[in-house]
Length: 349
Image 1: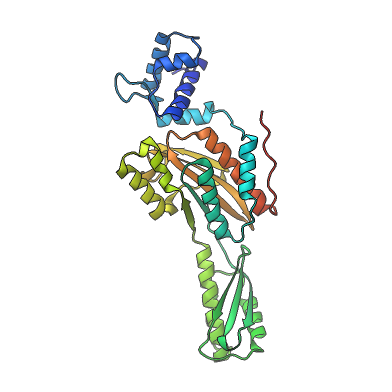
Image 2 (image 1 turned 90 degrees about the horizontal axis):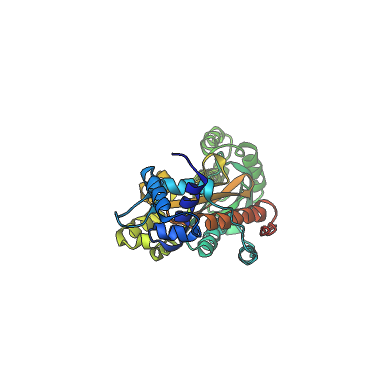
C-alpha cells in the first residue's frame, strides 16, 4: 500500500477521534474534520483500504472504523504530534514534586501516586535492581546492655542499620577492631564471597567476637541480596474502571490483579531507552495484550535508574501521556540525580 499524505491524514483523524470518543469513526466524521476537501466516497475507499491492510478494524459491517494495534503503532511512530505541556500542567508537576522525599522506597511509592493522579491512568514505579551491589562501609556502635548496632552503607549509598544482640557479650573496645576487620575483608564483594571469607576467619577470631562478626556479615549479605531484587509499586489500578474498555468486570479484574500480584512482570524500557510505548499485543504478558503501556526511565543517582510507567486501554491518549510522563521523568532525574533541581518548563510552540 502506498502511504499518501491523504491516507495518513485520514488514519490520524480516525485514531484521534476514537481516542476522544471511544466510538467507531464513520466517513462522515472524517469528511467534517477534513473540511470537505474530499468526497465521502473517496474517504470510504481510503477507510476500506486501511481496513484491508490492517491499520483499521470494522467491528460490524455497518459500523465505523476503529484503530488496530498496527494503526496505533503507525500513529505513534509517524503521525502523533509532539505535545508540549501547558504552563499550568508544568507548574502543577513542579508543585507536586517540590516536597523533598527521603529514601528510594518512599520516593518510588510517592512518584506512583503522583503520576497516576496526574495522568488519570494506573501507574507503576520501580528502581532497577542494583546488579553487583556490595557493601561500601561498615560501622559498629555500642548499644550498652542491648547489644551492638550494625551500620551498613551499600554501594548505592543507602545506609541500613540493625540492633544485634549477640549470644555472648563483647567488650566495647573490640568494636573498633571488628569494624576494621569488616571493612578490610567484607567490602566490595558479593554475598557468597562474604560467607567464604567469614569461614576463613573463623579460627582467627575469639569466639565472642566471631559471633558478632557472623551476625553482622549475615545481615550485610541479606542486604546485598535484597538490593539485587526489583521492588515495584503500583498505584491507581481502580482507575481502569472508568474506561469503557473495562466495563467487563472479569477483564478489569484480571488486569487489576495482574498489576498487584504480578507487578514485577510489568515492562521496563528495552535497551536503556528513555521512553518506550508498547501497544496491545506488543506486550509480552498476556494480561496486557489488550492494553497499552508507556514507560519512562530517569536517573535516581548513584548509578541507579528509576522507572515510571502508565497502563491503560489501547485507546490511550498517547501524546498527552507521553508528554506528561517525559516531564515527570526529567523532573525526577533533576531532583534525585542532580541535587534536587527541577527542570525549567518547556516553552509552548
